[in-house]
Length: 221
Length: 221
DNA sequence: TCAAAAGTGTTCCGAATACACCCATGA
DNA sequence: TCATGGGTGTATTCGGAACACTTTTGA
Image (cartoon, rainbow over all chains, first blue to last red; front, side, top):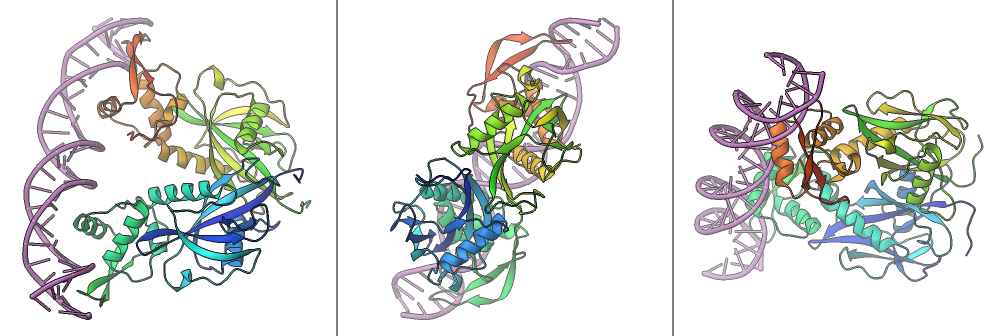
């Protein structure tokens, strides 16, 4: 036990992406600290002169190489026993990233080693209270995609309605009726049709983009 | 400027009640600190061995005498400049209290002096970023009363439908149709009829109680 | 020609809204 | 008797849910 006279402040980031029709979190393997070798969320101490958002962004980049993710503060975890050594209050963040090249992250350069995208519902044992953090983050995400345009953070600029629906289904954990889904999203002032089509193994699909790639509280789904 | 080498952790509580058909926040007048004489939210530093919830409860009691309020973590404010002297990260809480005797609070015993219930939309200048905290708290409250049974925290054990509606109207800031309101709340498994009636200046009103006085996510309004 | 995803409309049901009159009481 | 809040029902509208078949392409 090595307690300071007051709690320290840290940030942790639960960074999600949707790949293979599955909601996945980015985990890092801890090198040092009270849980060496365990999987954990990227995160670390907040410096004296930076904001919490800046700290989250900096730690995410330092440990995973990820930049440009959408970040949103989630909840602050402050149980006196969540870190078995020191008293650390952790401000948790939800991060969202499209499954494209940005999600094929660089290797860590901080005190963590390996990285892994892991299905958010099939977590290995995690350090600290990070299992709770991930579960809280998933709950927030599920709630929030239903009344905001937040999914734009998980998709590339151009996408098909099938891809959009797959993202919703992965987050909500249930299938959606395709006709109702299309009717709904096309009835909202959310998307714009793009000129081309995506030609895959089968019938080409129309391409869409979000009208605005920034947080909005519209009614969705 | 007197910065520690790492941010300190504090809690602040925006405690609400509904009185006179108005949503009101409890403010305390700061005695010391960087804003002497300004109105502020009750709050203070988190001790080494207590949880954040415990700290919020303790500070609220120490500065206002209030006990037994419902408390819920709101958001963590961590701008490096929010306290002009020290770097303090503040975990803000929403508190809710019925307008009864519990809201006629004792005088403060900490570093704050006078107390005042103030309409949440007519705030005086507040210390730190407490204006933002109150606005964020009101937004959360407005959203959350619509899909939870949270209003039970603002009402005594027994109440009339008129009183219940008045609480909703004060929080939402708009009038509700009485017939539709009654139809809705009575259609949900939310309330139970109590035997007596409330006899006031006019026709006696039926008394109701919440079926469960604990947080639930029902659909409401 | 076949497998696989894209694309498209209608019906039904439940909830939300709008809306007006009588009732019981104390002053 | 009157002022005040309590109590009640119906018609309309809107959105959500259920549901099946045809089209286009590459393999």
